[in-house]
Length: 411
Image 1 (tube, one colour):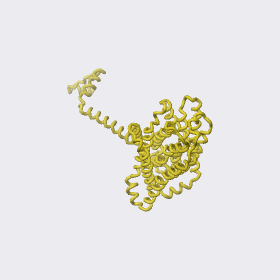
Image 2 (cartoon, rainbow, N blue to C red):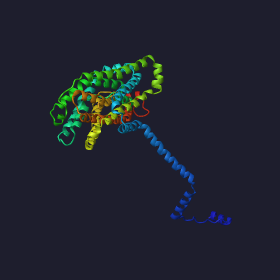
Image 3 (cartoon, one colour):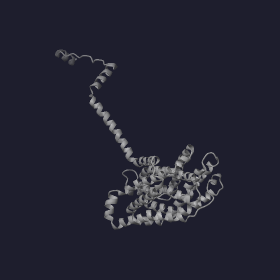
Image 4 (cartoon, rainbow, N blue to C red):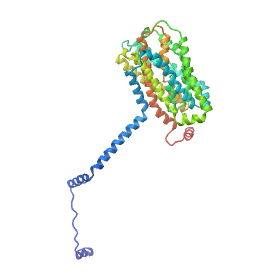
């Protein structure tokens, strides 16, 4: 009461609050938005576009190898080296690029660790059994199912799949991928060289074992067998000149010139050149396949099946290798096994096929190499995809030290 009397004395009257409707609120908000300068809106849109561009560039940078692999295959499909230079190209790439890969590998691999991995005979036996017998048995089971319908698949492709399962592991891509995934690179070098050393002896025996079953598709093969002396000479010459000699030189550089090696090879990351050499090796294989018109001899439906079966085969064999090895091997060793077992080498398979049988027609030669060539491209894609999860699996969560991780695993 006293307050009201004071207000009246001072001449102050309380006025009622005005009622604002929803329509008035909308009009006010629209007017306020109109007051925002158009330059601010344009800046917001510009920043949004810049964010999208940076995200795209990061994606390209993280997957540059897969993109480069696709471009290399596309280039091989459009332009091929002339037929008269194919042999020279294959020789240069096989010796030069693989020599660079193994020279850099020798510069970065610890000699003691390399020697220790050569003495692990139980692990060698496990990997080679999986690579030769485990892989080929899975392939032969699927081929036998496909052969139940004679109109389903071309016999040359079925034989090509069996040959793919019997060939040794590849060398260059195994070493590069294992190193990128932080696996046991020394073990991969040992397993790859051992597998390719055994290839000329084991591949003909295993392939003959599967093709002597009398199945209808085996009649496409010539009955006359060739000699193996030339293939032995070729394989061991290539292993010596492109693998053992460059790696030995790399080991000499690492042990006798450690400062130069640490500064240039390790410090400047020159070892990354191995990845570019691997792309050249892949280009060489596909260039040869397209130059021989191998893909022109196969029906599109058969080609689609080859692609899907190759993808499924890679993941099945990889899963067998992973879970079987995880029971008794370290993470780094498991990664090495997962790159060695599912991988196959057309560089060994195609010459072996041409040597094992005399009188192979050009069409049958082309069909024998199609599964190997397609599988090699897909196995490199799969191996590249597995690099990041394998690396995270080995290194542990961000911020966790490797020693802390080992203590946690043993606790």
